[in-house]
Amino acid sequence: MTARDHIASDMIATHYYMSKKGAHVSFRVPTALALPALIAALAAAPVQAHSIEGTAATQPAAFDIHQADITAEGNDLVFSMQLKAAPGSAVPEAAGQLRGAPVWSYVWPTSFDSGVVGFEPEAGILAFAVTAHPDFDDTPLFDEDGDGDLGNDGRRWHSHWVVLVEDDACGGGALKVKDIPEGETPRLPKTWPNLPILIDSPGWHPQFTEDSLSVRVPFDPETDLKGVKFDAVTAALQVNANIHAPLLCVTDVFEAAGSLGLPGTID
Image 1 (tube, rainbow, N blue to C red):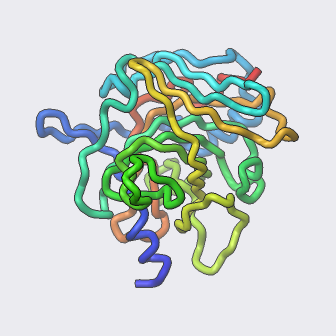
Image 2 (spheres, rainbow, N blue to C red):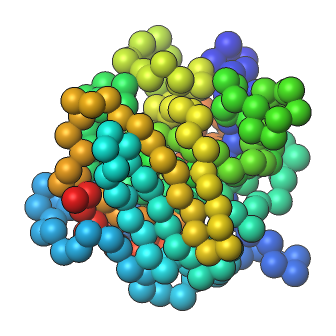
């Protein structure tokens, strides 16, 4: 096993599933998650609305989107979702190992260039995500539960930037978090968690109420925040069984509120 494999083994795992009364319930990725649809949306989707309304009933209800938004407040963006049940109240069961370890997430795909947050420009679809995964920790700079241990907080909801690209190895037209090939040294954010994928762990803490989730994210003053398009998704991913590229695939979707047409805009 290479050093890269050890890093991945120690710090990553993702398979989104849910158990209800002992049953395994899966949600297949809709064809709208294909990268060509996202690229077309980035280039040509009309501005239909500022915020996004959820359209379909979803289980678990904590991932059923009622409304989602990204609002600009000075140099900050506030990422928010309103859910049909308390967001963050449902968390995945631990798998007890890296392979197939579960992660659940709230995600805002955007039309931001990936270079805005420190990745290489035009690397893929830049998305902001709030995730929880009890089998591993990928925020090595932060102690979310305040117990003095930086390496045991994966079960706590926390934020990431990720770059998504298509990879048929994840399923026809499915997306993954973009891998960093062995030996390559792409531009990365300062808070990259030393994983072989394009992921950032910036430490912006999500805030929960009984029916909403929000995260305030600061940007450099020169960043143009207005007119950026976005969508809202609740989704699941899974680490490859052999812990190699593709390392982290999107496997299941609970809801894609705007059908990944990026109908929302930041005013």
